[in-house]
Length: 596
Image (cartoon, rainbow, N blue to C red):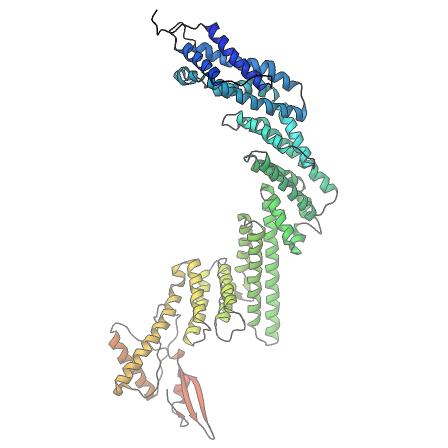
């Protein structure tokens, strides 16, 4: 025999060597007096497996070693692990299971090192389950399958004790539930089917009983909400400490459903503490709590949203009635009939702002409440109020804020905030073009007669409208503002023209505003026999304008013009501000002299 030829190891001889190492490992895990496995012992075991797998057939014992690896684990589980678990109960059984699972993982890890060459050669070539997987499968089939129901029941019992306020070992529960997760080797099936399903069923029964007790004690709706919210808070706490995070939506939905579904009508209908009463009394925190607690319950949100819509509608209808009564009284007493319009629109804006805050801040910004809010205000904002549309009233409200001498004494910040609220309210109006026409006419008067209180606010409002409704919505109005800017530049050029051309000086101070026809509202223009002085003014400006452009036609709108006239009367002189038509009538009167 050649010197380098290895001696063949038969199966019994080789397995006897492996068994000694396995037995030593078992003794260590069981806490028996035993020295640790030295590096020499480890190399002996590894080399034995290596040699037995590399011998020529029929002495290649790879398959036999693979089978005996499984058999050694099964024998240990059946002879040692299962008996130790069967004799313990309740929490003691759970502690023993945690200990045995940890020991089993240690044993599988060590054996996988001993038999490593199997994994690297034989198992890889045959596409067999790796040694680590075989080890976990043995525990699952022999230990887990026998105890899973018992373990699940004990865990759920401890969870219920925790719900009742008793101290429980959360770390123990976390370790047990980790077994349900790890035993699936990457899949959630065992956790979900063998534990979570039972937990959800128990939780439903537990909270159904709790809800029944609270209702029978005649708890008010807010008191019930407090208890329900505390329950949800505790369930979230459990999930964060020992349940898997995937259980959260399922568990919370189950708890919410059981606390709400059976008793919804009774909670809603409580005379002094139900939802109607809370909304009427503006108990915002209690309303917010109700939404927080039950927002995930399908049967909860629809009726709650409907009540919100109904309540907003009732408040809006009451405002309309008050406005119409106020309008009737002012007409009868011949007082300022426009005052009720401002008061009404201010109240509608405040009503909208209040419920927008409710939905955003207290009702979790939930889409179903936004839908109810929108539907209620669409109904309100498309009604007529004493013969006026909301579109007209909104435009008038803005005009009152933006023009000089406004009855609304607001700071710049308040004006900007109010205009923002107006734009939001405008989104509910179906015929927005109607608002555009009303607003454009009032904007035209503010611009043409220098009635705007602040140009920045005018531009800001147009930007808000443009941002909300698009470029086309404000195109004409922005053109009007641009016309006024160009008119100032044009006036400066005209004054320079007159000063440089003495023969062109009409002898009267003349200011002309040139408007683009398509941007501005339509104005009627009637023929007028102007005084000679004013005729010259018109001709001078036409000559100046034709120098700038020969392709535009000027149409004079005398109805928008004004004149400052010095009236010399006895015993004093008076300044008169009159329209162009009035000027024509006064033109032949001896007491008047025209400076402009």
